Length: 397
Length: 229
Image (cartoon, rainbow over all chains, first blue to last red; front, side, top):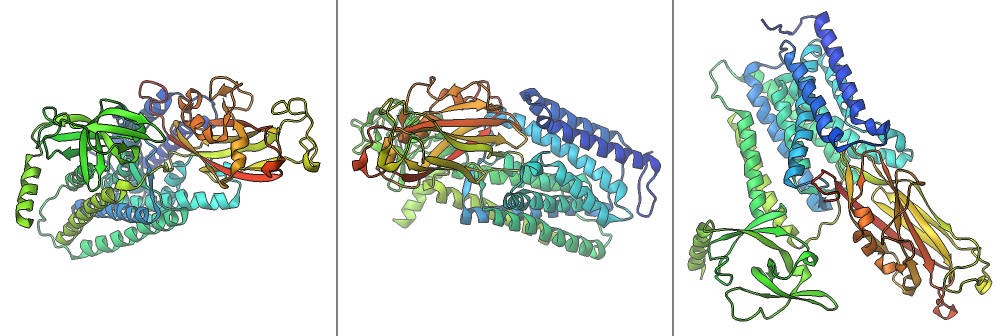
């Protein structure tokens, strides 16, 4: 029989010991993550294998403990996961909007297949171990005094997220304020919301909320890059207001909903489907380093036929080589032709030609016009697009 | 519950449209900055400065002691490096004169929690004039501490390049490109420079002050087989 901690129960000595153990392990992992503070050489294996193993070990440890129940109502856990999803989307949208005003930047993270796998391991293990530990600590300790425990656990987990020397090196007061505003306050606000969600609904809503934010940060190639004041304001206020919204909606739902059977939803599946849909659309519109493009004409036959979709790898004009099939912008249309010669005068230009054309294109292509290089042809999958376009033309011409 | 689900779906649709709008909008926008996050943070930090070679000039007019327009040998030339923000190093050189030689130095630290590698650099001058045409530079780096071996951009210490090639020196050299900056580690960058001795009074640039900024972008190192890949 699994021991359950319920509201009003005193925390047993055993549970207290387990909580102390968890704090100790979290602290140990923090020191391990900051090994660079003590040693000058940190290996690849240490960062991307050993540290994830520590987090997975923590996850295993928490799972081996007898279960503790979160404070919220069992029937509202799915509801909380949906609320977590909405909070994450609101946050991302506000950051995106800020990016449109103040600019975007390249993500610093690796986007090679191997890089993505290692990052999944690195981020996923920390998310799993950290969230299960948070869930246990809150369920075990926050029953009698939820507010201070949620705040303290959030503060602990926030500070744990920053390198050991972060605050030591920031001696200039202005830089210190900027750092705290840009990173620490938003992280604390996010942690507060996550802890509240986890306190009520267990680890699932926490996974949904933090998972979406982490996935966006680590796996979106372009990130909003607002100024530090905007980061501070939005990063702190959006999670805080989201917390108020979650509290309001949860309390309302907890009082109003009757004991009638609710149609079961799987919030995790909803979240994953939504994320996948968004990523698919972003891929189609060309946000990622690789994007699809439908070919309309037969100028590159037999390599590319009308209705084929080409996968274009984005690249700088300076990286183009002779013989590459490139996609470039010509007024308002995209042309996909082969580079047959490169001229290196005052500026680099490309002479292009369709394989099926008798003569080269009239105008040379500047490096700035180049969008990318064709790396794969997927036959026939663009027929539907062509059909829709041709019907559109018939309608409007 | 239905309202919440409706809100969730609406937000997903909005996010999709935002992605589409963004892709359209950024089609002609060149995104060069690399974003910092709590985990990935490489910044200008630590030691910095400009030092001048003392004694007689070894280039331009070797052996000559410059006493040009009242300036003594290396008596007035000065310089400084500042970090106006964590992404930028601003270099200011004051009272330059023909033949003066010096060295700009700044440091970069990986303060994040994942290893990083150099991605690109940009050098932007605040003043567009002829003096930069008389500045020659080269560059080298040192790892971990300032007494580590020199790793020259161009493979050796003897070749001078035009100042306007400095950006290309950063972006097209083997020494810095393949380097991994582990968490907590420093990278020290040195840029020796000289003012060409052919600069004369007719150029009316004596005692000039010039300022330029250097931005360096780093990205995650994730071991893709070859260093720096």
